Amino acid sequence: MDSQSLNHPFFCFFFFVKIRIRSLEVQDLNEKVEALGKLLLAKDQEIDALRLFRNSTDTLVRQYEEFLHNARNALPQDPASTPAKEVSNGLALDNSVVNPLQVLDFLLPRRQKTANIVFFKTHKTGSTTLGSIFFRFGARHGCKFMVGMEHYTILQRDSASFGVGSNIHLQHHRPLGLSFDELVDTYSLYIRNPLFVSVLRNPMDRYISAYRYFWEPYFSSKFFQFLQDKRYHNQQAIDFGLHNSTLMTQFFSSGGSFDKMGPVLITEYFDEGLLLMKRKFNWDLQDILYIKLFDSCATQRNHDGKFVKCGPLVEASSDMYRKLITENNALDQVLYDAFLARYKEEVASMGPDFEEELKQFRMLRGALVDYCKDDLAAFLKNREAYLTGVNYCTQFVLDDLAYEGIIRIGKGVAQWVLDGPPTEFV
Image 1: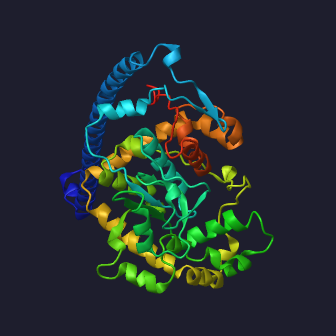
Image 2: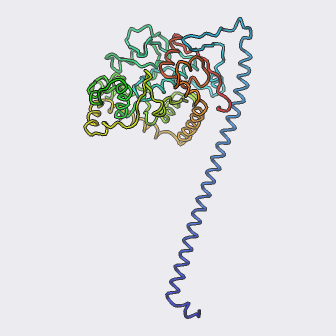
Image 3: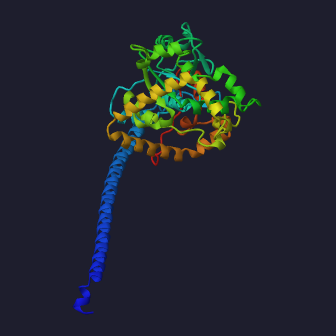
């Protein structure tokens, strides 16, 4: 090809386009290389962080094993001086066993932990799980629980049988017309300077869940009949002692009672709420570990052992039914919206380490769930048979009826066997 052909405008344009395409390809390749470099750097930093965490964990395990060895050597060796093992109501109790979780507390930084707690337990919100967290905390730290003889506490101002000088209340109460301020005053008779804690759920979802749990397994009548039963309207507000719109307005008025509430978790952000509570209470991650008992439709049962359906409710997709649900739970919606807004403000005020700690917590919880999966399956299969003996995992698979029974047996003190967490879990 001669030089004149090369100077032809067509060939000049062709070579320009070709060079431009090559330039773009090179630029794209450089960007991919740069992105890959950033990714490798991030992975290196993640590996360094995991290595640091592993090293600190290994150190803690060695300290734990050494201290546990010394603690066990300090136990009375004379059989005559060792408390006899007692079996009550199918639960093995042995006061001579060292609680290794208390040993771990010894190794952690000394801080004053919040221990005086009143739990406003709500229906179908994850409250059984949160109550089990308070149970384990109280058992580990020797707290005294308020004792009610029934699953529901009938709260009255002259209920001296509960016992003055308690630390934690975690049973479901029935206010019997008491307002929020009257509930606060009554609990303060038994627990000194308590913090009031609760958990709230989106009212639409909670109401449908209540139907699935409390109504559907027992009655052939349809969802429309459930809508007419006022016992299930505004259950969350009623558990707060907010029985009508007047009390709700007073609750949120200037100088009202809204600020008297301590941590109020939101079911849809359960782990994040636990982490906020942990920080406010000066607790540790192990204080808020939990296992969700019913994590699939196949395992859903109610307190009578009846299977509970889950999944979408056809009726609730109707605009008419959704309108009725909203009207039935108007007070619940006001309460939920207010505490959801407060939760979002609190999360926004947390530093960048909040997300990192949340990842660490979920990693630890995942390890716990994996380690205790056989115990969970055994408990769900045969609750009574499983509770004839206990181990480390048992404390995490107890439902509210079980841990309330332990509290009654100990007359407010959870005397409890806790075999140590295995080193492969810790």
